[in-house]
Length: 348
Image 1 (cartoon, rainbow, N blue to C red):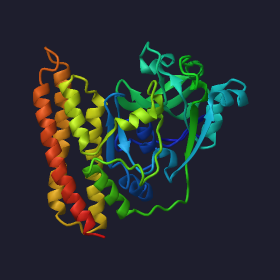
Image 2 (image 1 turned 90 degrees about the vertical axis):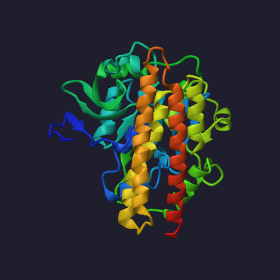
Image 3 (image 1 turned 180 degrees about the vertical axis):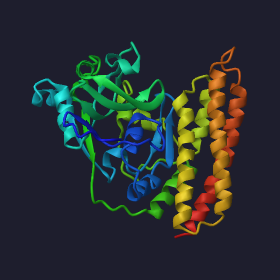
């Protein structure tokens, strides 16, 4: 983005994220990934996926969540502390942060900001990356009308949005607003062994508990009455994700982001294969690329079939076919993942 010379305006750099699944992933990938080291970090992560049908939760599961991404300096403060040090003026706090190079991820009530076009109280974490004092506006990125894009909010809207508090959650006033900025000078080394381990976990439908540290995103924290113990006991990983999708389709309970996540994983895998092919002499790379393209087509088809079925009359008219397509996609994915694992292991 073009930076104004006017000191009353500052817009921190962002770019179109390689995938946009959940707000925190999309925020991170719109800040990093545009230079080689950052791109290598992205290629070394975002492999395994997970889903919990009871909590309607789906996400990538990886070694380094964005809170401890090597290229991000992450800080967290409570809302009450922020308001205390800014004399109650949250816009002033945002301006000071952005002037210092920090992006802001606050908790807000979407109903208070007109760009969301909602009348429902819903807490959320957009990426705030710029301000214009003369217009009394902040710039933010988020899923507006289901598409990750950019919008503005007035200072008054922003102030109103963070004064919202869910009284049923006693811990809500202690939720952490995050401010992040890019680190400079870090050199990342691609870790082939880590990638192999993550592909193994994906093929085996295994979580990384016990072998990798766990970190949580705001998205998990946002789930109402979210119990971590219950959430992990019901979580499905890797290739078992497809089985859960089939169950959800059977019970008419599947949601859109769950369909998109598996496509997002295939988008990243295509980029990962291209990266690996430039770095290594990957055996059977043409076959891998062909299978990767087939998975991309199938996951897009499945996502569109889900939408067609959801809006059909009668509703869910195409669910039986959707289950068949998902099961077939799983078999191709298993063959692809086994072949990828074999090819990667030969590189060690």
